[in-house]
Amino acid sequence: STPAVGVLPGITRRTVFDLCAEAGLSAIATEVSVASLKEADEVFITSTAGGIMPVTKIDGAPVANGKVGATTERLMALYWKRHEDPAWSSAVRYP
Figure 1 (tube, rainbow, N blue to C red):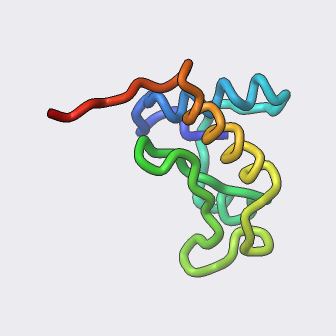
Figure 2: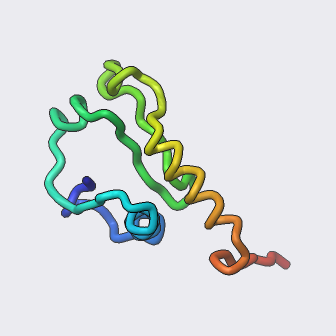
Figure 3: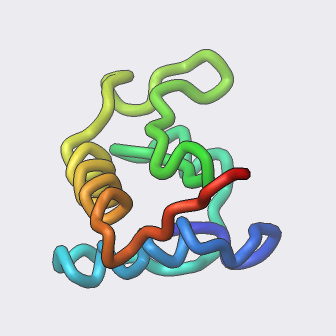
Protein backbone atom coordinates (compact mmCIF):
# COMPACT_ATOMS: atom_id res chain seq x y z
CA SER A 1 0.00 0.00 0.00
CA THR A 2 1.01 3.59 -0.46
CA PRO A 3 -0.05 6.73 1.40
CA ALA A 4 -3.38 8.04 0.12
CA VAL A 5 -2.55 11.65 0.99
CA GLY A 6 0.54 13.79 1.38
CA VAL A 7 2.29 12.52 -1.75
CA LEU A 8 2.39 13.79 -5.30
CA PRO A 9 0.42 11.77 -7.85
CA GLY A 10 3.60 11.37 -9.88
CA ILE A 11 4.33 9.44 -13.03
CA THR A 12 6.64 6.96 -11.30
CA ARG A 13 4.05 6.24 -8.60
CA ARG A 14 1.38 5.74 -11.30
CA THR A 15 3.73 3.44 -13.21
CA VAL A 16 4.17 1.27 -10.10
CA PHE A 17 0.38 0.90 -9.82
CA ASP A 18 0.26 -0.07 -13.51
CA LEU A 19 3.12 -2.56 -13.14
CA CYS A 20 1.46 -4.14 -10.10
CA ALA A 21 -1.79 -4.57 -12.03
CA GLU A 22 0.03 -6.12 -14.98
CA ALA A 23 1.97 -8.47 -12.67
CA GLY A 24 -1.13 -9.52 -10.72
CA LEU A 25 0.01 -7.77 -7.53
CA SER A 26 -2.34 -5.87 -5.25
CA ALA A 27 -1.58 -2.17 -4.78
CA ILE A 28 -3.78 0.29 -2.91
CA ALA A 29 -3.59 3.87 -1.69
CA THR A 30 -4.36 4.01 2.03
CA GLU A 31 -3.03 5.37 5.31
CA VAL A 32 0.39 3.92 6.14
CA SER A 33 1.79 4.27 9.66
CA VAL A 34 5.45 4.18 10.57
CA ALA A 35 4.66 1.17 12.76
CA SER A 36 3.21 -0.75 9.80
CA LEU A 37 6.27 0.13 7.71
CA LYS A 38 8.55 -1.20 10.44
CA GLU A 39 6.60 -4.49 10.48
CA ALA A 40 6.37 -4.85 6.69
CA ASP A 41 7.94 -7.66 4.69
CA GLU A 42 9.18 -5.12 2.14
CA VAL A 43 9.23 -1.33 1.76
CA PHE A 44 10.19 0.81 -1.21
CA ILE A 45 9.85 4.41 -2.27
CA THR A 46 9.54 5.94 -5.72
CA SER A 47 10.99 9.03 -7.32
CA THR A 48 11.46 10.43 -10.79
CA ALA A 49 15.24 10.22 -10.63
CA GLY A 50 15.56 6.91 -8.80
CA GLY A 51 12.58 4.92 -9.97
CA ILE A 52 11.78 2.27 -7.38
CA MET A 53 14.21 2.34 -4.47
CA PRO A 54 14.20 -0.31 -1.72
CA VAL A 55 14.09 0.70 1.93
CA THR A 56 15.97 -1.82 4.07
CA LYS A 57 16.18 0.18 7.32
CA ILE A 58 13.81 2.49 9.17
CA ASP A 59 15.17 4.44 12.13
CA GLY A 60 18.28 2.23 12.00
CA ALA A 61 16.31 -1.02 12.34
CA PRO A 62 16.12 -3.49 9.47
CA VAL A 63 12.91 -3.94 7.52
CA ALA A 64 12.22 -7.70 7.66
CA ASN A 65 15.66 -9.29 7.12
CA GLY A 66 17.28 -6.02 6.04
CA LYS A 67 17.60 -7.12 2.42
CA VAL A 68 15.78 -6.12 -0.76
CA GLY A 69 12.70 -8.32 -1.09
CA ALA A 70 11.70 -10.42 -4.09
CA THR A 71 8.65 -8.31 -4.93
CA THR A 72 10.66 -5.10 -4.81
CA GLU A 73 13.36 -6.65 -7.01
CA ARG A 74 10.68 -7.81 -9.47
CA LEU A 75 9.06 -4.38 -9.64
CA MET A 76 12.44 -2.68 -10.03
CA ALA A 77 13.27 -4.93 -12.99
CA LEU A 78 9.87 -4.33 -14.59
CA TYR A 79 10.18 -0.58 -14.03
CA TRP A 80 13.63 -0.27 -15.63
CA LYS A 81 12.60 -2.52 -18.50
CA ARG A 82 9.70 -0.18 -19.20
CA HIS A 83 11.85 2.89 -18.60
CA GLU A 84 14.30 1.75 -21.28
CA ASP A 85 11.55 0.83 -23.78
CA PRO A 86 11.46 3.51 -26.53
CA ALA A 87 7.66 3.30 -26.54
CA TRP A 88 7.64 4.62 -22.94
CA SER A 89 10.53 7.09 -23.11
CA SER A 90 11.29 10.32 -24.88
CA ALA A 91 14.82 11.46 -25.54
CA VAL A 92 15.68 14.93 -24.30
CA ARG A 93 18.15 16.68 -26.55
CA TYR A 94 20.20 19.55 -25.25
CA PRO A 95 21.64 22.21 -27.56
